[in-house]
Length: 367
Ligand SMILES: *Cc1c(COP(=O)(O)O)cnc(C)c1O
Image (cartoon, rainbow, N blue to C red; front, side):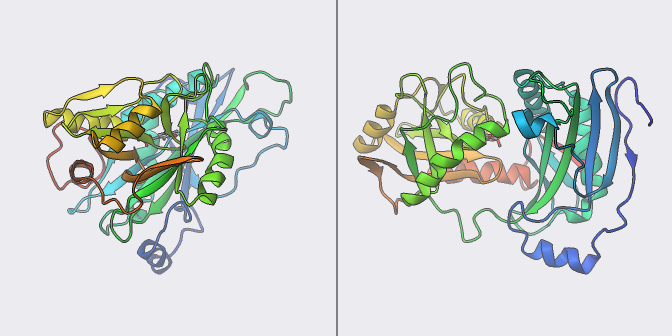
């Protein structure tokens, strides 16, 4: 076993002997869907309490070997990230604000008592995988290579404490256009019985448990004809938090953008970027507690003109209708808002290199 001491980590590469042939890959890239197909390689880095981070490698994609007593399987000590690599018209491949994902992974690690991976090693891990599997980055409009870094407790020990052995991995999955038939506004379901996160809990960490907690209310949303769930704060059940995996933004008629501030939401990089673009255009932006009543009354009176959700996967999803057990506000066939769509276009233009990148958000990974 080779141990790398000091940073940055050096990656050893073992090429896959089972890499897909060009023809097979082309078939997948012609209709990749989302999260269904994976590239030929995976990044792995080990951590132990004695050695710190070591053995960084690019290895063939395949099942992980986990002892049945691995603590992640029992106590859920895990965190993840999600970002995309975009192919530009000249063939080069770029990541969007990867240093923000690096910082957020460290923040999630702190909350979940996992070791912090240095930011430069995080960004290098992304770059190593994208360079190795560059042929898996699709080039059709609105397609990308979705990157999923994650960290798990893999010490074989059933005692309850933070693990002394951890694994960090990155997998990559080609992603088709999220809205294949044009951006379609969605209906969302208000969960009043369930919360996704509590005060002092793990809501601000990107950890699997928050998603596990959202699945039952998500089923309730489907049963009520809605695509996503909206969660309220767990203390008063009065303030808007976010959807299961996306942040929300309200747009007032005067152009002000309002988004919830809370210790139990996940601070999206898409949200941060959109709010910056809006500020650049001269819009006022407010990050503050937002009540459900403010949303309902604002949409009913017309003071709130547009509502949208945002996250890496779909960038911006317009919200047409909010539905609860005893009310609904908005209209199922409301068209996507004008500002919603124009911010979406501006952000995706930057991501795909179709317009200048004034904030230096893009990092080139492959020439
Ligand atoms: C990842 C995530 C988001 C969106 O974050 P982005 O950085 O914009 O992709 C929002 N809410 C939750 C709960 C998330 O896990």
